[in-house]
Length: 341
Ligand SMILES: [Zn+2]
Image (cartoon, rainbow, N blue to C red; front, top):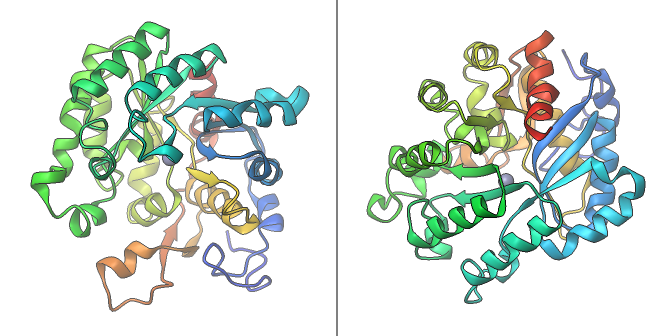
């Protein structure tokens, strides 16, 4: 597939190819429904633009990490379409520096999200969490264990987690292994929790946090039948999965029903921008379902971070995996539909 609208729009960091994403959105073969299981639709104003773009790209349902206080406004605005969005319980990251945000206030919020009918809860455990709070983000810290236990008692049976981060970050940002641990070490407490909470479905964000090593991720899936993945984080997935599109297609086929489409679109009042949101859908759909080979339209700062001789506006090579048929249906819709019920 070659884009039909190269160099027809002004260039920006989400659109180095000058694409008209409105037109490109109509050119995909797949026309069925899509569920995006991983977004951050932060505010009402941003949600209005977001849903217009979701419509263009066939996204019929969105699962979002949204501040508790902003849920009702977004739901009310959707009126009889409120089923289009389901919320994931998250701490109040806006108050990250206030005491209690990741301890007492988080436990309180978990209950309030549940009262609003939320079924999914996120346990973010990226290594950089150690810079935000000394222990609350470790999957095996007492604080974290307490919140996981409470989530279970409150009836949550879908736990999303972010374990790991790109290999590029371990190479350049997490060089202090004493503080952050190695990449492999991030997964040790997760494996324990997957066994301990075996009747909970765990969603490993960002291809389980290790798209660079699909063999490792396959091992996690094989060892833990209650573990599924989402495909979110467009820059990361495009950069890494494009290196092995055939392996990724085979991986999705082998694990049909356990790979869920997600983008990690962040939409809030500080970034309301058509190309920003649209580029994530265009790039990830192009990666999943087409045979496109060429530059990604999205600037990927990790490229010049790893190789400073590269231009800061470099974009990754995007190689479509050409997934189709029943496997694509499962990734885009079937797997999430089954899990969300
Ligand atoms: Zn996210």
